[in-house]
Length: 108
Image (cartoon, rainbow, N blue to C red; front, side, top):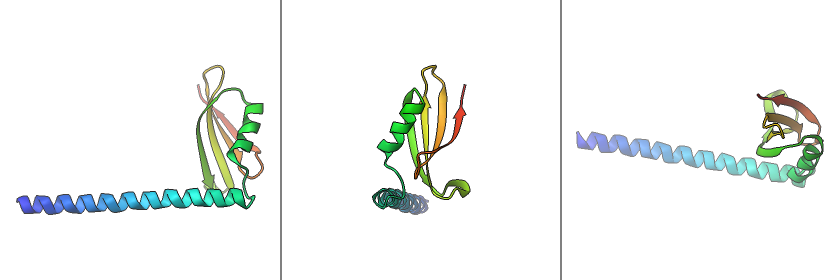
């Protein structure tokens, strides 16, 4: 019984280790893709995007995600979440190549 338990534990541990390595590799690949896109002028830097956001929206940035080809869009998008001066959460979707605001979703 102990041997079966140890084998099962080992297999689960090994599976989790492989999964963690895959996640780490994907994150590294995404990071490298983003750096390449900035260096090749395909997308603007985060500083450039935030300058525009700060001119058009008052509040504090609480999260930023950069996504490639999200849901049929042709290019990169930044999803930026802010808490505005009225303590309302806003999710702002921005075209990463042009800094055009694509959508604003306000929460209560």
